[in-house]
Length: 227
Image (cartoon, rainbow, N blue to C red; front, side):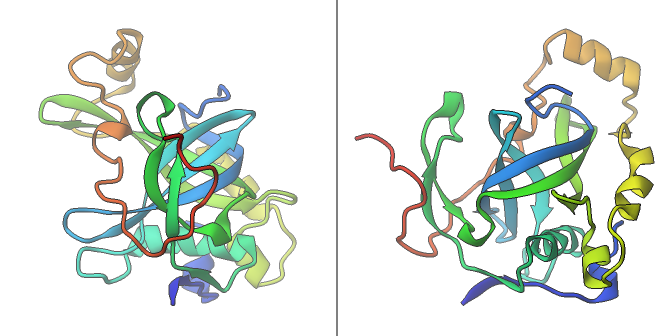
């Protein structure tokens, strides 16, 4: 069984701050463990437990791989596919059971991880997105693209055997882009952050954290939690 098979088709590989990732930009990271979650509707998403300059964190990057009806999600599956190409993989095996320190205040939490993509060095481009939900501001980190760590190659450049780096330079003009929705603007968000995000956390963990850890196997990833 495999969780995802990589595609090298042109349309699937084309590219469309502090140590803690808190804003838009390009970030050299180590993917320590990709975490698979399943929504109440049945869609599957991949969030990334990463390390950036010594800081470990979970990035809920909205990599929704499948829709509720199990069909591939057009956006999320494409970006995840590019990650496989950059990793040099044709397929990724089903997740295995795990325990990682991704709960509140770093508490150990059961989850399912994709071992084939663990300990992978990449460059990740993130774009912050702000919207409203139930009267509160929501803050999300949207993963836009990945690049190979040693030469900034895109999946498209790898598949087409092109000189790496052009795609990275091309996307550089979007490095500081931020998406504002529902009438929000830069001034409003700046004030909201300065006020320590009142009226609800507004962070991605309030809405985008995994709803369910699916069981795909019994193998443990990393050190189990203490009894």
